Length: 357
Ligand SMILES: *Cc1c(COP(=O)(O)O)cnc(C)c1O
Figure 1: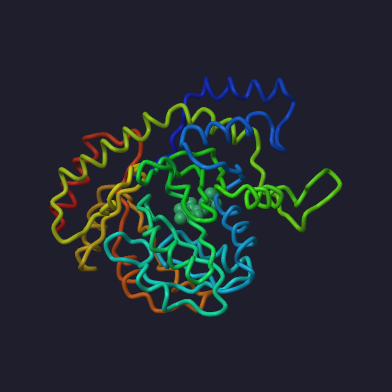
Figure 2 (figure 1 turned 90 degrees about the vertical axis):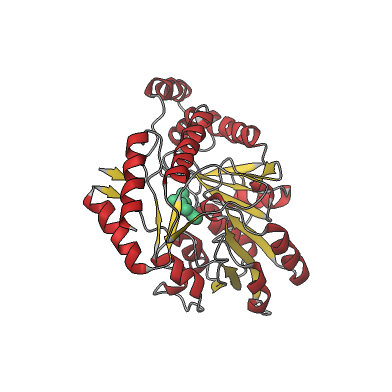
C-alpha cells in the first residue's frame, strides 16, 4: 500500500538519548530545558523571528484570533485545512471567504477589498502547500484598512521568501508540527511574531494567562508543549536537510515523469525557497480525475483529496460563493510524498496517471 504520506521517524537511539536527559531532570512539561532549547534551535535553523512553541498548530491560530479577532469578521481562504476556519468560528468570529487564485491556490488579493466591511478585524490566509500568499499586496491592503494579518503557515517549515523566513510576514504566523507535517514533534506547533509585545501576550495566553505564579493577564488556555514532544523535535531538526533533500528528489521525479496533460500541478511563485512538503495536481475534467483516482486505488495507491471540501461549504458557516476553490477542491489530489517512497514507486504512480489520462 502506498499512502499519501508516512510519518518520518528519526533515529530511536538519538531520541532515547534526549529522553534520558528528561528522566535525569525529572521535568516533563511547563517549559523544560528541551522545549526552551528547541525554541531557540528552530529560530536559529530557520533564521526566523522569535517563536512560542505550543502543543499543536491550531492553538496558535486560536490565540492569534483571540488577540486580533475581537469577534469580528475575518477575511479568509476557502482552500486550507479545516482548522483555519474552525479556529475562526471557535473564537466567536465570523469567517468571510474570499476565493483563491487559480494558479497559486492562495487567497486572491484582488478580491479582498470588496469583502471588507466596518466589522472586519483581520485577514487570516494560508500559505497553502508552502506556496506563499501575495504577501506585499495583503500587507498594503491591511495597512490601508487598519486590519491585522495572520498567516496560517502550517505547511511552511523551511520556506523562505526573498532569502528570509516566511514567518517574518504578518502580525503573527503560525506553524504546525503535527506528525504528518514535514518537521514534526508528534503533536506540536508554534506562533511566530517579530513584535515582542504580541509574542508576550501570546506566550502568557498559552500558559493560562500566568504573569507570575499568582497573577494573571486575562484568561488563558493550556497550549504548552511537553518535553517528550520537544525531544522529538530536537532529533528531527538534526535530520531536516536529509528530509527536504529526499522530498525534493521525489518532486523532481514527478515533474520529469508525469505527462502534464489534462491537469495542473502546483507552480511555486517567484523568489521562494520551497520545502517540497506536498505535490498536488488538479484536473480540468472531473471524470478524468475520477478515473485517475480509481486506477491509483486499484493499484493500492491512496493519494488524498487535499483540500476537500472547500471551506466555504462547511455545514457550520454561511460561506460566500467561491467558484475557483469549489471547482479545484473537487478534483485535486496530493500525490504520495514521503521519505522512503522509492524511485520505482514514483515511476509506477506516474505511469498509472499518464495512462489513465
Ligand atoms: C495541519 C494544519 C493545521 C493544524 O495543525 P495541527 O498541528 O494539526 O493542529 C492548520 N492549518 C493547516 C493549513 C494545516 O495543514
